[in-house]
Amino acid sequence: MADATRPTIKGRFTTCELVKREDLTEDLVKFWIKPAQDYTFKPGQYCTIGVEGIERPYSISSSPDEEFIELFIEIVPVEHGGHLTPLLDHQKVGAKMTLRPRAKGIFVLQPDFKNHIFVGTVTGVVPYISMLRKFLNDPSWPEPVEGVARKDYQFHVLEGASYLDEFGYDEELTKLAEENDFIHFYPSVSRPTEERNGGWSGAEGRINVLIEDYLEKLGLDPKETCVYACGHPQMIEDVGARMESTDYTFIEERFWKDDE
Ligand SMILES: Cc1cc2nc3c(=O)[nH]c(=O)nc-3n(C[C@H](O)[C@H](O)[C@H](O)COP(=O)(O)OP(=O)(O)OC[C@H]3O[C@@H](n4cnc5c(N)ncnc54)[C@H](O)[C@@H]3O)c2cc1C
Image (cartoon, rainbow, N blue to C red; front, side):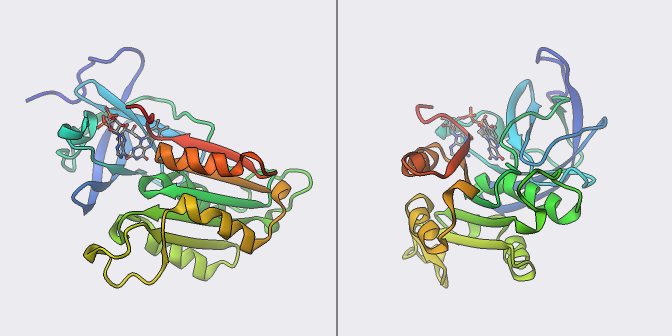
């Protein structure tokens, strides 16, 4: 049996242990990992884990003040080109994986803006969960900036999925939106007529198509608003194009390249 921690990768790495996993659907799984050494990150950043020398980056959904690092992973089957995820799918609680010692990424909260429009597809919601959890857990975060008071922040999570069982954090986001008038959750399914979406009564259609209407209804000042897009490259491309000739600030995190 292969040793998951064997040093087939170059450079510095540590290990982590899979302490919990939750399978949401056939191809969506949540992992909670425990790093073997102290691990720090900013909400929105990603970690890099590996098995058998194959490494991939994963955005972190937990807040930095939580005990374990939480990940939300889509398994890409081997026949669709998946490399690491088919191996991750076989990891059992207690398994050891490699972990690069430093979190990376600049897809983080932009504190200069009052309004934060978080757009994501399925696993693309992950960085926003970390930001929201941190914001709610830690009244001293983010560090104060001139011109925007913390109490003025408004968060809008727009999440798109093909099916209602793919949202991953819908219960948490629904609850957060109910409990906090500055958090809003707008999930949409793109295949509303399919049986798997039976009982769905929320928004319908691709989230990238719905965003303009959503923004128009809010009537926010674009100069005070940052639109974030994370996940599927085509969704990001489209949202970016829609924001191009506007005064909204737009930032993105692509999980893979379109031509892959
Ligand atoms: C900054 C960053 C953060 C990321 N965070 C996450 C995360 O939180 N959760 C997550 O599941 N993935 C995330 N990814 C993608 C992840 O790194 C892997 O690429 C993905 O898990 C597939 O790994 P793989 O080795 O099985 O396949 P790869 O060899 O990486 O890719 C094989 C093929 O799968 C396609 N592909 C990759 N990811 C997906 C996907 N999610 N859905 C459909 N097709 C895909 C690619 O086009 C490629 O053709 C992130 C990527 C980046 C760059």
